[in-house]
Image 1 (tube, rainbow, N blue to C red):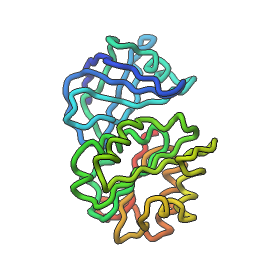
Image 2 (cartoon, rainbow, N blue to C red; image 1 turned 60 degrees about the vertical axis):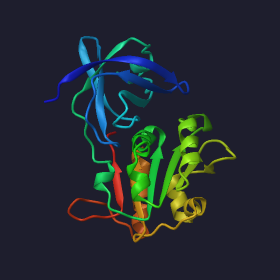
Image 3 (cartoon, one colour; image 1 turned 120 degrees about the horizontal axis):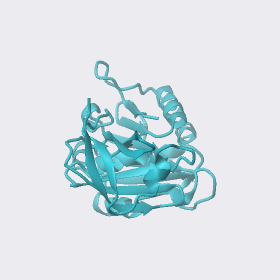
Image 4 (cartoon, rainbow, N blue to C red; image 1 turned 180 degrees about the vertical axis):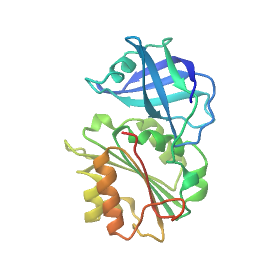
Length: 246
């Protein structure tokens, strides 16, 4: 059984009308970059919780979570209304296997995300491990509208500091000159993703981590498997590591 810790909101940053990030002061938790934890509010006499990936690195004393408002959802609208100084609850048992300790060595590390699925990858990229283990690190972030391309300053700083880093964005519902159009699985199939990254997708050189909506996880993994990659499991290591807590 997990216990609940009481945290305090330091900042609630609205990115759009439906996207927000919470920075939270709380007792330090031991977690690995890429993991998630449940956060909760007491609403209507019940404690409502859902999992959120850490955006911050494990050594950052301030926790950060990136979320989307589900209009009819029981929790997310209330989280989005929190102000600095407001309390919230954080479970004391982070978990999840979307971590580099579960990923075999390779030349290229691909991080494929849709929407808020970028959160665990930002945590991973804020550690030294990916830069030490992989020759090339490619972050791919797919959204519907360009306004949803969040954490631009963080990503730009990484691009300036890490020569092995490449960020590719997709925008599906409007034209955006700095992004590819359409969806990630289609771009794997037609070769646009490889062309944008400047490297090939191949079992002998690639490791993929996927986080986001179920459609991308299923179709993206299928396209990669059609290219000869296989799912990564502890007993049978492969090249595709997937996390879904939807």
